[in-house]
Amino acid sequence: MIRFLWLIRRELWEYRAAWILPAVIGGLLVLAASFGHVDVDIAGARPGPDALGGALLFGFGIVFLFVMLAYSSWYLLDCLNADRRDRSILFWKSLPIGDAQTVIAKLATGLIAIPLIYFAAADVTTLAIAFIVSLRARAWIGNAMWHPGQWLQLQALWLYLIATLAIWLLPVAGWLLLVSASVRRATVLWSLLPPLAAVWVERVLLGTNWVGRILAIRLVDGYPATAFHDLSGSLLGAFGFPGASRAAAPASVWALLAPLRFVAAPATWAGAAVGAVLIGVAIRVRVRNVDP
Image (cartoon, rainbow, N blue to C red):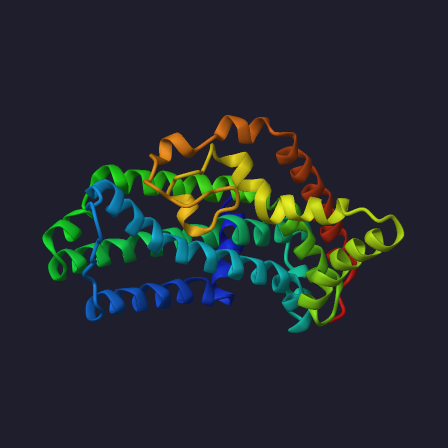
């Protein structure tokens, strides 16, 4: 276990952008709150403090979430390829560390460690912004961000997203690792071409779109429909989650989470099985593919 944690620390040392990027984003948001216009003009009825506070906190967090998803994808696509590119794979193979341990450590870094770093950065940033806004804005706006219930819900939402996305996106992560271990260059292009080619060939030869629909379910609308209850009128709907209509009033996070449905869904574990196979193939490819 200690060796595994050191492998993850090694990844974070080599990919310093994993913690520098969220720190920069947090700093920019804090600067915007410090020197920007933070007052809010509401036409009509004033929203309740819980509604306003929840919308502001979730709005800041969603910025970190989208950047985290993009950076984690890039990391998984680059990590195994970089070992061969700089020849460090020869050094690591000389140590008593198996290829399976190395690949699983990189997988854990991309799906768990990096999201936790962004989670911590989002927490620190929202605390700093809440403090600044409470000093600069109208009292009712500043006070809206200091509700313990909203903070607790935000923590629960972040941890739930990290855990469920790690399982749901396992086939995507496995595919990115396989591409990273297999190709020599143009990893982004190779990660996109086979799925797009499969969609095109199916449409031309069969006139159907099963592959495209499977990809859409895995990448776009399948996760929110499986991991959450009805998003209509919720905070998540305000920020573009598929299947969610315009947010009328933020619903409680506890009412949105659907962990039992997520665990019981066949798509969850079918995807996890595919991801496990792809990761296993990536390990075998790394064992044999040493040349840059």
